[in-house]
Image (cartoon, rainbow, N blue to C red):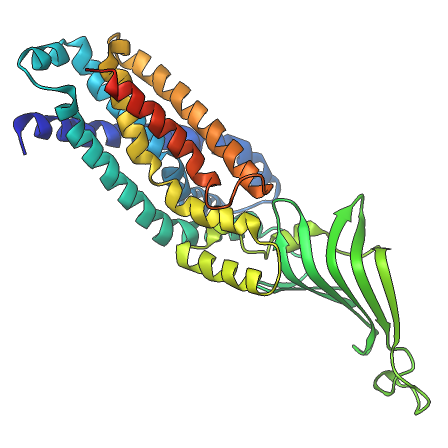
Length: 364
């Protein structure tokens, strides 16, 4: 490794550490101010609160690492521009593309580390943090499984798949029990949604077991009474919030676990578009570190950040905001089926990568 590459690499490590600590501190401060009132109102112990915010750090790091890479590169080359070091290197016959080598290498390395970190640490910390945040909800009793079971009063509900983002329930079965825990009625629905305090079931089959021998009936019982409904409304003593506490979120699963969950959902015939988009996003998002490192270099080496660190931060915030807006918009198109699930998470990387390539080609 040449002296110039060692110089840039050392600067990258130094500034990236500083930026990461600073951004995490700001993020935690804002999150703390937004949540502390709820924790105090629910009388959560101080140690529990501190542990919750400690568990939030891995998720925060995974989300702001690309921004940290971008700001780091902008600062490095911005200061070099301000001190006329870039001009001196160019005058010595060194190409700007030679300066990109350590930046691209560090961007790629951070991308790999971010992917591994997001796979190993983040799912565990997110799951633990969610449990603390939702610990104040005591009823109804729930069993956290992939197929969700929930009990409320005399009713037991089983939901095959629940997507919290759009409040979609698929494969819902409701068991109505009497005081002696005998089955009185059963309703199977293809899908369900919660609207204005009532449950709206679609594609229902209702079976009534009153009079059966299992429920104290006599031998005259000829079988359950069955009715079919295209739609049916019910008042039940639970809401989507109760399911939200036990449904598995994509953020709580690593790449392999999400792939298995996705495969099972699709094999059972359920719409798993959102999970498939999130599945591809787990590989697309870490790569943005490489894209941001090259874009930061293109902006800084273009001479637009020679006014110093403040301007570098301004450019970094603008670029990060634009990327996140495009990325979120493309994910929404994927969730809605307007873009293929495999393409939606990669669109932002492709667009910003193309813009970066054009900017770099214009540097010479």
